Image 1 (cartoon, rainbow, N blue to C red):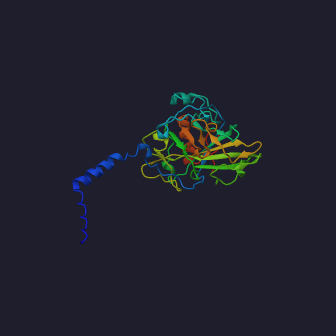
Image 2: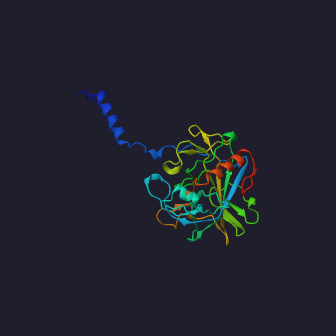
Image 3: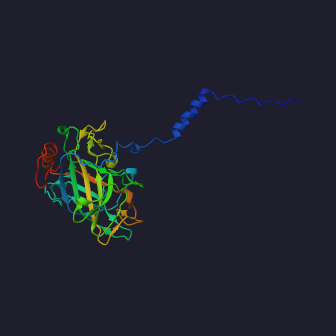
Length: 312
C-alpha cells in the first residue's frame, strides 16, 4: 500500500502574523531613559594642553549625604570626602554653599569637589593628603572657551564600574613625596602598591563640553561630554568649558596599595563600591566673577590671576 504524504500545514494568515508581532513588541520592555547611550567618552587622553591654573584644597567634611541624582533609580548613601565649600550637605542651597568658608587656597573658590572615601583591606580609612584641581584650556578655539555656568553639576567616572575605567578618565599612580612631579606615568587602571616614601595618587578627568541647557541630568553625566584630542566638542554639546582634572594624594606611610580597596565604606556595607567605581563630583558654587576672571585671564590670554600662577 503506497504511503501517504502528510499535507503541509497551511501558512498563517497575514493578520495572525501581524498580531503576533504586536504581542512580541508589547512583551519586550522599552529601554528606560537612563539606559540611553552616554555622550562620547575620551580615549586614552592624558595630555595637559594649553595654559592652566590649579587650586590646592585640604580635606573638609566627610559624610554620606546623597546630593546628586543616582543611576538605576536607587538612593546611594556611600561616604564621600569633600573639599572646597564647608557648607555642602544634603539640602544646602547654591547660595549658602557659595557664601561659606572653603578649604581651598583661594578663598573665593567655594566650589564643591568630592570623591568617595578610600578604605584598605584591613578596613582602615585613608584620608587624602590634599586635592589639586587643575583647570586647562584644551580648546581648538580659545576665544570660545567659557567658564562653567553657576550651579553646574557633573560627575566624572562611573560609580558602578566593575572593571577598569578608560585611561584618561581614572588613572592611578605613585608620587614621590619629595618631588611629586617625579611620579610614574599615568597608565595604571588599578591602584599600584606604593612605597612608604611615596603617595598613592588618583587622577580623575571631567567632561569639558556642555549642552548649553541643563545644569544637571540623570546621573549627572548626560548633559556633558568629553572633547577630542584637539579640544573640539561633539555634536549636541556646543559649549566648550575648561578641562578639569582632580589629582588626589593619599599618604602611604608603612606602604599600602594594590587593594583590595573599597570606596565609600567598609566591605560588605550597603552601597560600598569596589575600587573600579572611583569617581568625582563637582558642583559649581564658585564666586562666579572670580572663576570667569581665571578663565578669561589665564586660560584665554595666558596671564596670572590671584593666588595661583598661570602655567604652561
